[in-house]
Picture 1 (cartoon, rainbow, N blue to C red):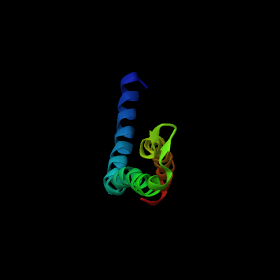
Picture 2: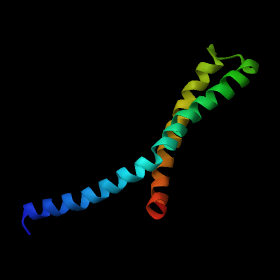
Picture 3: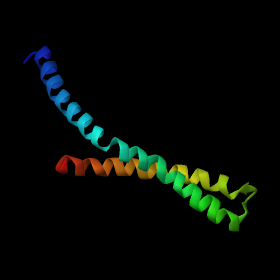
Picture 4: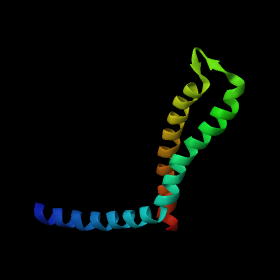
Length: 94
């Protein structure tokens, strides 16, 4: 096979995979975005304002500032691992 035929074969196969991934993303975009933004906000509200009234300051920082960096890191790790693991499920079920 020539290089051109390899390219055409690659593009036809990759376009069908890309199309399927776009359809799956369209079905799951709303809940995924809501979870990715809602979870950190919920943690900040519950832990930051609720528990923060009892804790006070941590090494010169307000508890909310101390907590925010941890919540951002936790959210990034959870989102990345969830997206990586959930794709295996969507290949079987969607």
